[in-house]
Amino acid sequence: GNSRIVCGALIVTNGGVLQVWSGPTNAANPNYGALVSAAQNLGVGANSWIYCRSDGDNGGSPLFRAATMDVATGGGIDADIWGFALMKGPGRGTTMYGGAGHAGPGTGAGAGVAYGSATAPVTPGSGGGGTESSEGGGAIRVEVTRTLTLDGTLRANSWNAPGVHHAGGSGGAIYLRC
Image (tube, rainbow, N blue to C red; front, side, top):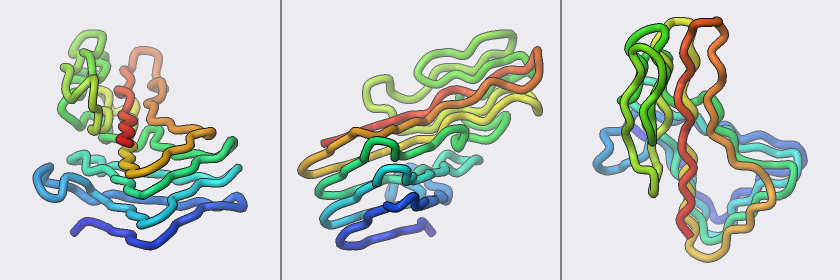
């Protein structure tokens, strides 16, 4: 089943780290791979991080829910390269030269197709098309019912592929609903 953390308040501080690993999802009910739900505040202090990893095979991704959320300067939520695995995802490249697509198509021979929503992105990025390509960026989904204070960093990037002629994965998604 899907992982769940349900609490009154969750604060990551003093250089702390919280890792949230998602399971697969069927994209119906529930439409997340892991749930982190705080009835009051979800906070990330300075020099503290939440790392969220999407399921590399089917894209199940974490969902963060809270009444308020505070992300301090120097802290943040990081989903870099934690999206679909190499050669996985709906926008994966189809050759070692095929860059993955996401909100738009990829580039190169065997480029991946566009998928997901450009206005409400909730899906992770796809992996590049070769064994020496890069993974896609993960997905960060935040639902806040009252106040979101974002002074820190949210990121869901892919990385450059290590080989000269190898394709990159696509960037992930950051979706904030307040």
